[in-house]
Amino acid sequence: AVFDNLSTNLEAIWTKLRNQDVLTRENVKEPMQDIRRALLEADVSLPVVRKFVKSVTEKAIGIGVIKGVRPDQQLVKVVNDELVSLMGGSRAEIEFAKGGPTVILMAGLQGVGKTTACGKLALYFKKKGKSVMMVATDIYRPAAIDQLLTLGRQVDAPVFEAGKNIKPAEIARRGLTEAKKQKIDVVIIDTAGRLQVDKAMMNELKEVKSTVNPTEVLLVVDAMTGQEAASLVAAFNLELGITGAILTKLDGDSRGGAALSVKEVSGKPIKFVGEGEGMTALEPFYPDRMASRILGMGDVLSFVEKAQEVMVQEEAEEMQRRIMEAKFDFNDFLKQTRNLARMGSMGGLMKLIPGMNKISPQQISEAEKSLKVMESMINSMTKQERENPELLAQSPSRRRRIAVGSGRSQEQVSQLVSQLFQMRARMKNLSTMMQGGSVPGLGA
Ligand code: GDP
Image 1 (cartoon, rainbow, N blue to C red):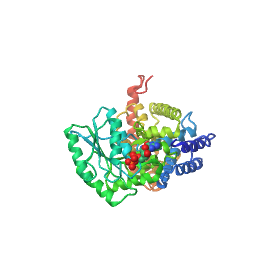
Image 2: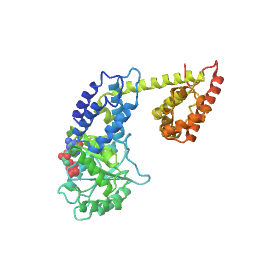
Image 3: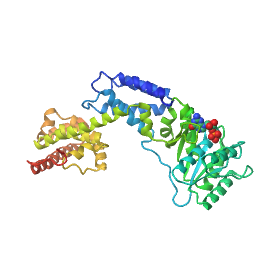
Image 4: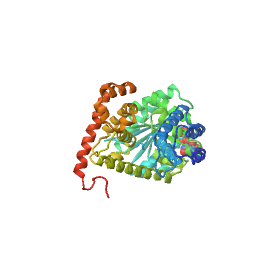
């Protein structure tokens, strides 16, 4: 089955990290080389592999220790999340036209399973309660029209055809007129494929496209062609403009490179996958489900997520104690800003700190941007200065030294210092308010 080899190769990788305490640039080096090799073997294109490995590495070594979670489990989680985002993040749905039929133009090279996919899609939409019509415009391949007629009978959907002595764009136009007359919901237009991309085919597709103004243009590609499939999606998108891809014959492909490369290489999502010759063998493409299929570690993923939540909670409580004691210093400041950046997407930590729960995603992204600037300045402080921000408030020469050391302006350093004191003041107010009372947001 698809991804079999990749899954097996990855499995061997996690065990190599079993005896580590934390993921570091050094100890992820070898596993990352293995991941790189496994992806290349799966026929993922090289630039995609490079980008993937780089981003997994950065994220992996940025996590730090999560209590009770082993580094190999953490890496599984990071790899999973990156696989999901590589494949487009979330499911790319089919668009439906408002008023009038939804027109789906199907394109693709010969033999990839385009006509079969027309029938499968017809059945898919019929099961969703829509009326469907298919239109046969492949006037070149002998028996192409008959094949579509047969599929139409099989899935019980009408097929519009007008013989072979008429231009494809004209057939498509008449088919659409007929579909409108019959108040059909979805019109699927089958087109002629060639063995290779050529000008005549592209021009014909462009003509059909401009004639029917489709809601979706789906390129059908064969999974067994691996990264070549991804390049085709990119090429058709440039030439013709498409809205997505259907990846067929995933059942016959043990590598899976196409599924992993299409989105990244072409910018266009896979919308469906075909996994067999039968009419029911069509599945909507879900990046997260595909990633779980590759890793086969659903329970590890949910375990790591849980542990991350617990950690966020504990860090919030620790911060809370510091706030109550009004001891908030530059170390806390740095930690909290880092948390902001790290937890930004989870949105967890800030919700747990009282008075901080109205921070917007925009503010979080601002925080991420200024994190680097702050870090450079705080890194130029002595231990004493970090723990006693007053020293900086009192001494311009200290501030000057930090500005020079971090390559920032004195003004930036002064701003950072006053920011900390503002924060402290706000926290003091808060803790006075909450003195003796319960702490909102922290629960029981
Ligand atoms: P077209 O030339 O692109 O229209 O290709 P066809 O639809 O005629 O399909 C070519 C061959 O591929 C046929 O034998 C189909 O049964 C087969 N086929 C299509 N989709 C799939 C699939 O998802 N899995 C498998 N195993 N075979 C498929």
